[in-house]
Image 1 (cartoon, rainbow, N blue to C red):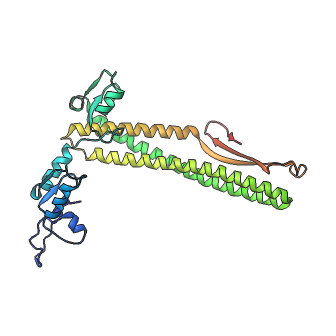
Image 2: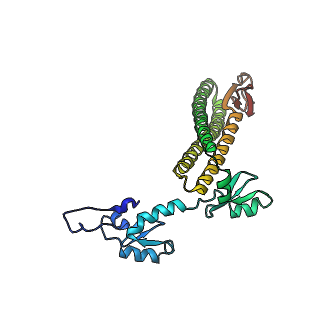
Image 3: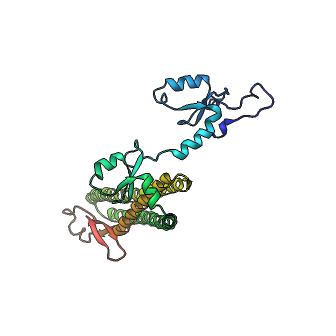
Length: 305
């Protein structure tokens, strides 16, 4: 970042009079006097870097200002910057749908909210509906929901450990049976081990996926909350947009938590086939492997054999 203009104050040396140093050149270990400042890149540019900045396709349309105006222009740009749509990242959020109580870009309004009767501009919506009490309630709800998601994440991790321990117990028993039987049983035992590992991997992947989703949701909540807290009272439109985005993200987090809680705890089980010694040749498996979910309000139910 070019905060403060990468200003240098060196009294001794040939670069003592450089007030604004070129950001790209500084990152490469050299110092050149900056003549321009790019608002989009948040960088100070020397004569050479300015020339190439205007030639490159990715940056030729960037707005360059005089180096002395860089910090001032940067603050103005951040204050007035539009917030991007979650569904269409290349479009700005510009409208509010009262029917769904959410903010959208023009593309969302045109494709999914054409029949909604209460669609207004952000200026009208922010001026009429935004209340500080709602923002305070949102903050309290955020803290509560954050704790709930962390507890859910802890349960998933504990579930993963218990499944791993069960897998080891089952594998040990399979090994004991294998050692007591003939070569034919060894082949069946290997098949059961493969099936066990496949089931374990499936459950493990599911739990790790759930943990990843919880982490992603927590990160998204942290990010949007930071953006909301950083939005000032001066820009009511941006503050209103951040408020609505916070509400939507926490609604998604509630849905995710409810889904995980209703699914319950995942487990795997092994039911030994006691008739194996009497039916050695016909036996195709050393036992029955079960995957089940244990919910709080109901007993363990088999999911897959």
